[in-house]
Length: 115
Image (tube, rainbow, N blue to C red; front, side):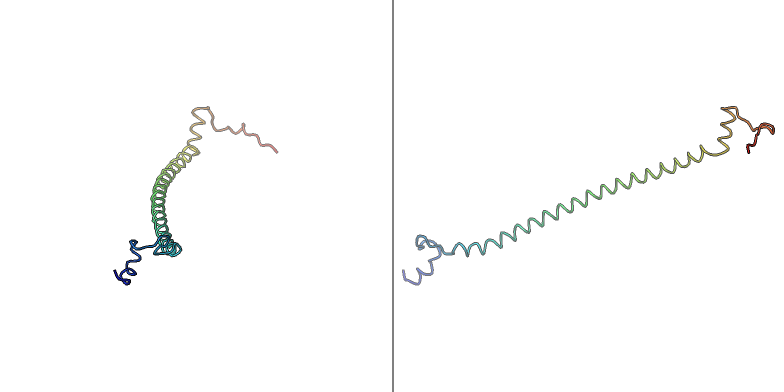
């Protein structure tokens, strides 16, 4: 073999001397480290994106449930207000006082005004 062919095949490994590497370890890390960091960053961003989408879906379910509960509570509040108005009406109270307690309107002599 000629010297030119040996120099050409030097990096293949067949003609490598012991202790010598075709790329120095510092050169290897300068190439691999940025690629490794870029890959890890992309994986991290993908995981972050998936986590955020899951959070959006979860919060959508929570918001839907909360909206349903709010609607039910508003309906119950309307019903309770109507019941309160019915129970405290003067006509109903007068009717209950006459029927259950036997109360009636006072006569003219029964009213005493205090000074």
